[in-house]
Image (cartoon, rainbow, N blue to C red; front, side, top):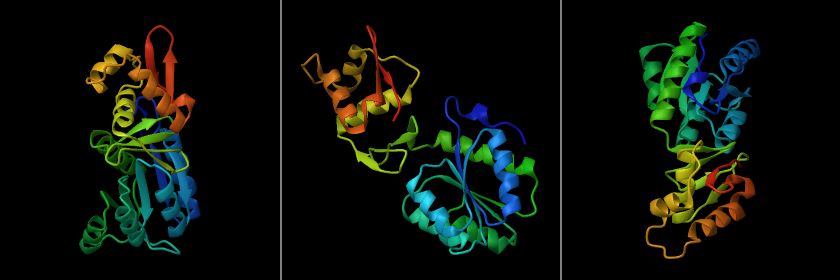
Length: 229
């Protein structure tokens, strides 16, 4: 398998593997972690559903024939709850009808067992590129900013609603995490109609109150930079 870490500058891609074949799980999880993915494993559909709903993932790899909850049903339930992670269905069922069913259920790709590891790697890289290009989320440390919902999703899955200006301020910081933003630049971008010179500091305080002091880092004499949850 070839590297995927160049696709994400600062953070590893988060991948959920839902598969009940222990030997295959060991093989894939070791290989994917070697590629730089942060991998969680679920051995049945119910566990996969729980993880998929409570933790943010870039990609999910789902076996179709799972105990407790079938892989197709799992994917349908994830999509019905607005889980937008890219999904690859990994299964021994490979007819044209099977593929159509999987794609209609919400899969972005479909790979039939037995498969080649290099092909799986290439397909996952393609899904990760699409996740970056079409992403509705921005990383905030171990959590993320849900742009569509205007919420921060904490590492434990808890969602924190932001006001319009809190959201706008955090989005600018998260979109350019390496940049130190001056107060004047943030005022021009987010608070054009505000007269108070302390408006940026006030909203940084609001974000820290809701999300923890480390979410925004103060750079003395310069301004603010994205921190981490």
